[in-house]
Image (cartoon, rainbow, N blue to C red):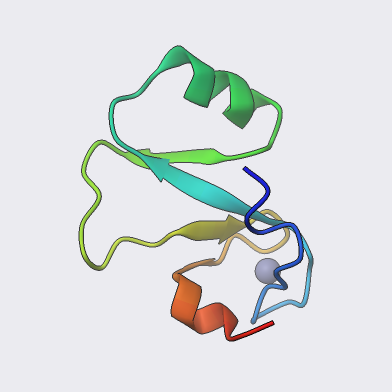
Amino acid sequence: MAKYDRAVCPRCGEKALIPLVYGQPRWDIFREQEKGKCMFGGCMLKQNSKRWVCTGCGTKGDDEELGGP
Ligand SMILES: [Zn+2]
């Protein structure tokens, strides 16, 4: 769950990105979501599915938008 710890939102510059989690909605996903560590994105991971959400401005995006380290 620490994948985006150093990522910065390309829109607002916040270091507040959390991963969007796809798949079966499991209780542990929602427990992490309650703690603000991830967000449940839906059951189906599609090719164009967003992979993270900024908790600062609500922007969702994929890994390419973040650029390299
Ligand atoms: Zn943002």
